[in-house]
Structure formats: C-alpha cells, structure tokens
Image (tube, rainbow, N blue to C red):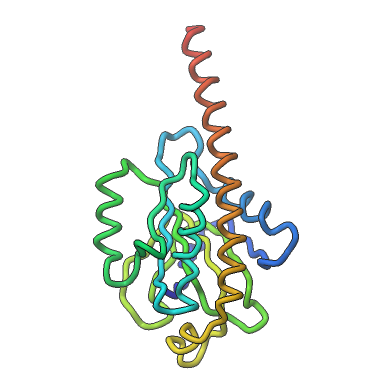
Amino acid sequence: MKSQPLFNPLDIFDVSIKFDDPTSLKKISSGIIDLLPFGFKREIVIVCIGTDRSTGDSLGPLVGTFLKETGLESFHLYGTLEDPVHAVNLNEKMEMIRQKHFRPFIIGIDACLGRLKNIGMIKVGSGPVKPGAGVKKELPAVGDMHITGIVNVSGHMEFFVLQNTRLNLVMKMAKQMAAGIMDADTIYTNKEASLQLEWDMNTEMI
C-alpha cells in the first residue's frame, strides 16, 4: 500500500538510490547497516507492506517473496505475495509481531508515489513509513527505519496510478531491494557473531 515516509527533524540519515545504479545493491545494504542496532540483542523484523491486487502496491510483497525464497540468516520476515501485510490486517500483524518479538527493530518496506524524475528511486532512512497516506487511509506508522520505492507519479487519482504501474519496473526494483537486504543480513549476522565472540572472550578474562 502506497506509503509516505514520516521524517523526524532529528533524523540524520536518509539516502536515495536509483534502482538501476550499478552500485545500488551495496548502497542499499550500507544504508541498512548504518541504521541497525548492533549489540543490543534486538530482533530485526522486516515488514513488507502491500498487496498483489495492485501492480504498484505489490512492491512490498514482491520484496518479501524474493527474501523468503532466498532465505535470511538473522532477519525475521513478514509480508509476501502468499501472506501479505496490507490495510485490512496491518494492525493485527503489528500486534502479533510485538507479542512474538521482544523489543523488535522494525524495517518498514512499502511503495511510494513521487515526482516523475524520481520514479525508480529507492530510499533508505531512519523513522517509519505511514502506509496508506497517499490514498487517504488512516493506518499506523510502521518501522524504526524504512525502505521505500517510488513506483509512479503522485498528485492525481493515485489509486488508479498504482493500479496502472508497470510490473516490469516494480519487479526490477523489488529484486534490487531484496538483494541489498540479503547482503545487509549477511553483514549483520557476521558482525553480531564477532561482537558475541568478543563479549565471550572479555567475560572469560574477568
């Protein structure tokens, strides 16, 4: 479901990457890593928001499906084409996540509409997304950080714009977003293992 990132004036991190930039995978990965809480024993939960009933709005569940097919080492995943997180079940899913995961650090993923020149941009930043903001739906903000993709032009009949977004673009963006997340998952797993080893060694020396 099309989101608007909610930016806090105190947020200090926000990066935009064109999906077909040859360095987009590493930039997405680095953007995620820069915001993750290392060493705090918080579970990392990815919530991919959207529905396969709308081409533009399928970005989130496509990312989730690609991640599920490949597999993640440390990150927990919600929202796929088979089991989407959307306007109807968002509150229920978020409550379930809060009950299942202790102090989860949530990465909210969703589609956005924006300026013509920004179509195809992927944004990684601190703070949540506000699902449904662009189509006048009141839904809870999601995420300690966000990853959004601008799939089409905003400003007029946005529901129909989402319905008529090119699937080819959405698929390509979803693949790059998923690849960047998988790379970040690997880096996070290795870094957390190193921190745990260092902690164990220091504990033994005391």
